[in-house]
Length: 192
Image (cartoon, rainbow, N blue to C red):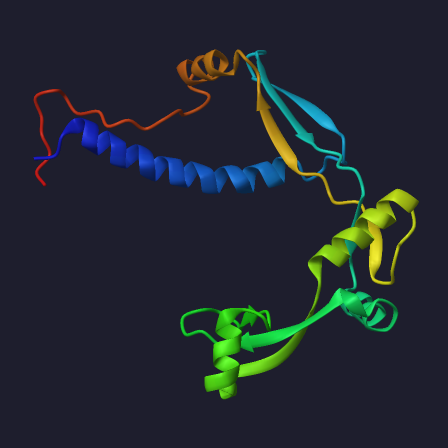
């Protein structure tokens, strides 16, 4: 026998999943005509304030936009920005795993199973972070492949404090459907 609270819990979990998926799509559609920094107030057809939809206006940020150009510059102008190590394939892991040459595993594999190691190089992330910080401080790119990029704003939906009551009035007026709770009488049970 299925308990009513169990049934409601499962139904609400399904509804929450459907609402989350729909909310993402509707939010993108609702804010598609907003420019960064724009805000639109939303009112119920009955006149109540429901909230607002806005698009954030993020500040530009220094980013690596051309990794290959930065890597080439590091190789010629700042060789300590490139580190050498090993790649090893690990079953069940997507892509090779990086090993520092001083890692104990790398030392053991190099001695006993060198065929499992592939020599590799990569950009030192701390060096990239320093170059991005230098670009930010100077206001100009510290190396090729770094640019100041303004990310697009994201759409946010903000409910008014009175939104819940206003939605209830819309439901009562038959202009909006609300939630779908199971409507079984207390004496009824559902066979499982």
